[in-house]
Image (cartoon, rainbow, N blue to C red):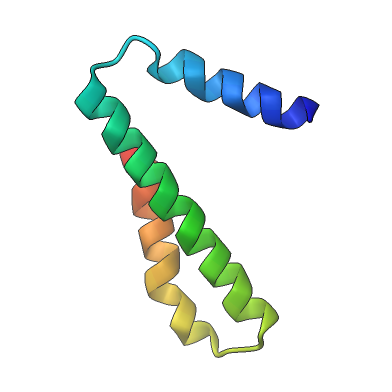
Length: 67
């Protein structure tokens, strides 16, 4: 629980003074980064070919760059 509160504090401090449109964009990119990370991990755990992960890794990296 301590880790989650630290993560929440980190993101809240980063976006607290930003306009609403920018906050929505940041949450949107965080959502896509988290989903692509989970899909990549799921593909690896299920033993799928690594070529399925290239686009999800790219989406994850681009999402984190835009944040």
